[in-house]
Amino acid sequence: MADVLPYTPIDEISQIHAALREEFRTNVARRYDLAWRKQQLAQLVAMVSENQEAFIAALAADLKKPAFEVLAGEIGSLIARTQRAAQLLDEWVAPERVSPPPHQQAWSPEVLKGPKGVVLIIAPWNYPLVLLLQPLSGAIAAGCPAVIKPSEIAQHHAALIGELVPKYLDPAAYRVVNGGVPEITRLLELKWDHIFYTGNSTVARIIATAAAKHLTPLTLELGGKSPVVVDAENTDLRLAAKRILWGKSTNSGQICVAPDYVLITRSAQDEFIAALKEAYQTFHPHGALESDSYGGIVSKAHYDRLQGLIARTKAQVVLGGNTDGKRVIEPTVFRDVEDNDALLEGEIFGPLLPLVPVDSMQEAIDFISARPHPLALYVFTNKPEVKKAFIQGTQSGSIAFNDVMTQVSVSELPFSGIGESGYGAQYLKYTFDGFTHHRATVDVPASSEDILAVRYPPYSRENAAK
Ligand code: NAD
Image (cartoon, rainbow, N blue to C red; front, side, top):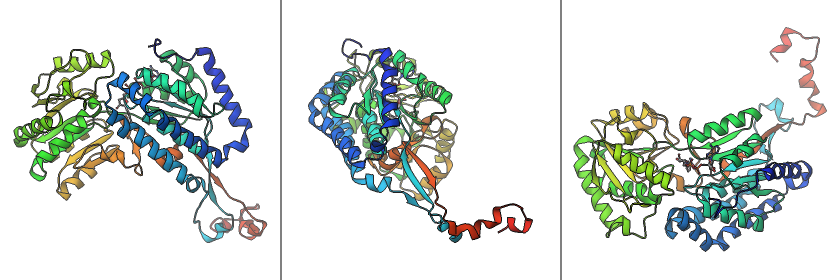
């Protein structure tokens, strides 16, 4: 990777960290300078919009990501959320008044919003731009200096970030560290005031263990197997098939909230497969391998991992199954997948879609509940009782009805996992809050002495109840 991506020398990492800590400790005026934060947010927007073509080219090289997906799924959402953060910043930082009982109101109790300190942001390769810069925009809004660590697997993107960030953002507060495990290991030895990690749950455990040594708070945005349930008796199967196939094909299924597998009413499996085939024809009339609207797998290792799943599954392929032999795998659907099949072991994170027939919605609820809490759960049904049964009978980071992935396009909603899919949240104020210390304050006037008199010794039991 080092051919395209210059790694940060390990010795420099502790110097970068020390410089940011010194900046935060000594430049107290800047900690609360909202004009400066807004200017840095504007610079972040300028960096992405002025270099749009370079980002599109980098993501084409890393992921064969179609320009449309880069513009809609990365650049567009990053710019919109960063501009919104700048607009809402005054409201977010304003101290929050609380409403205590009358005798405490004279103490002016408030919640102050201050930056937690110097933070570390570690991002994955699948949406390398938005998943790196979106947390950064929250850190800027909150007034936290930050080191950002792009994924070395999306190496063209990481190299571009290494080149552009020093040109656009204030290097006294925002720095990039590029590298792999040795560089990140060095980063994790240092003390941060918050770590925001997006990626897989195995590495999350390494991050959490390192953070525990310093009692560093964390946001963990992880993945897992996000199920889709199709209640065939109460949904439009053709529409469900089109929406699910789109969700499995975008970014070649390499999305943390992509539909992982489908639990489908057993008697409707054949009809659903026919609808998937029809949707596939409309998306890629000349086949996905020839399509400009279909991306690739990020690396040979991930390509081989997915090929390994295709080789190990005992289930029958009913759609797709072809590859270009190196980078692209067609959206591939498998029928009658059984509980212990290879496709149901770990997160697929690729364009393979297992169909698991179920005899009832209760069976689907039990299937989901018996597994780790997913990041997202999708249920296609128009029946209010079925929706309620899934809301109450399962746990997941988010739950969406009658579509896939649209919940993550609503920036006002929290994007978060639960259990194995992570903790903490992001998007707009949720990201800001993650990097913000909510500091309780009171200012107790001398006139409160009448009320406070009871607390002073000598004690009397009658006064304890006052
Ligand atoms: P990745 O391999 O790029 O790793 C993520 C980061 O961890 C990188 O910056 C990498 O350098 C670092 N890393 C790798 N190995 C490490 C180690 N041994 N020690 C310390 N750091 C290390 O990306 P990935 O983990 O393959 O990303 C895919 C996963 O991320 C999937 O599970 C997906 O569901 C999840 N994801 C979650 C979200 C979300 O918002 N919840 C978004 C995207 C992806």
